Length: 137
Image 1 (cartoon, rainbow, N blue to C red):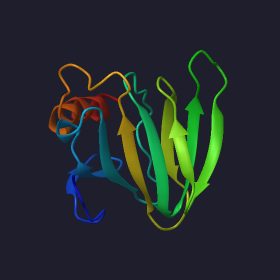
Image 2: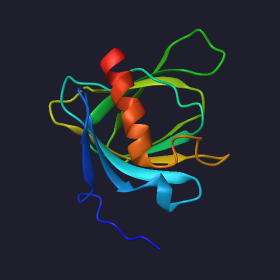
Image 3: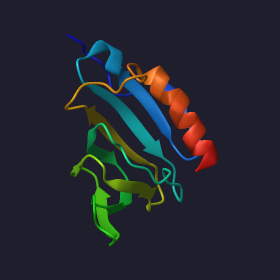
Image 4: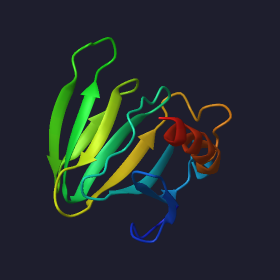
């Protein structure tokens, strides 16, 4: 069992946002948890998760998610705010924006239905890949 204060994770800072790792995927069969922080007028890079779905629980702030469901050409938008719960299905292209004047803070739960992806069995391995994507993207 793991018990963790959501404000005491290990920070991974990206050009657009910060992920504070709370539960590493290496400690689970197929999930991980982190706290995501996006500063006002900032956003995550546009991306797709091919191996996992994501759940977001908004703790503070206001945001906008732009997304495109698998097989669709239409970009959709969803506004999010404190206490909202969001499901990002597998293979959904998405991007999260902070639209308020205070940081957007949300808990992210990654669920890997078929197990952790090969070569990314830990958050650290995934973080190395993400560092390349955020530089290029």
